Image 1 (cartoon, rainbow, N blue to C red):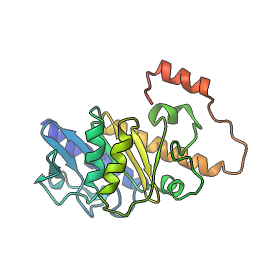
Image 2: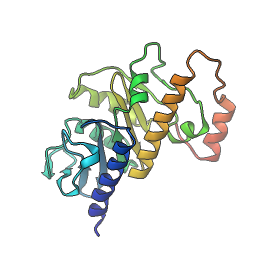
Image 3: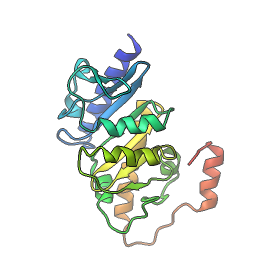
Image 4: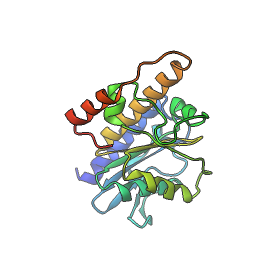
Length: 213
């Protein structure tokens, strides 16, 4: 099986898993994987639980369609992240409930909108900037992502949801799930006294696990 064929099957497998576990609903969310000659992206209006590997959209690095169904209208989100993060092998964008809920809240720190509640959030996400609201399909959102993606593997879109990159699709999915669980913890702990990781503990994680954020 070729690398592209494996990537197609992997997108279908992870898409089905995310859908079955309620991390994406209806036709929301999209997944992409970098290839040597372009990239694969889930089609527009496609349910992640019912993807067909043969119908995934394939695009070149100018965003032009090579084959497959019409790509997601949010293709520019992925392209902007890939252009700034050469090590990104895959990107997951969901409207997952708890992350989307946090993205609608007021008073967040736009430079880092979720606190370091657990070591695993720090290890997989680091700092999570909040990008201001843009209407769906607004190409200006791509520029907003481009301005932050060089320093951040993930961003949270206001009133929308997370965009998370990873070296592999598995890594991107696991990081997305860690973000969603941290958002759930953040909402559960509202109004209580919380012990977040301190700077010394974060610095230790960065040193031991070679984190760069």
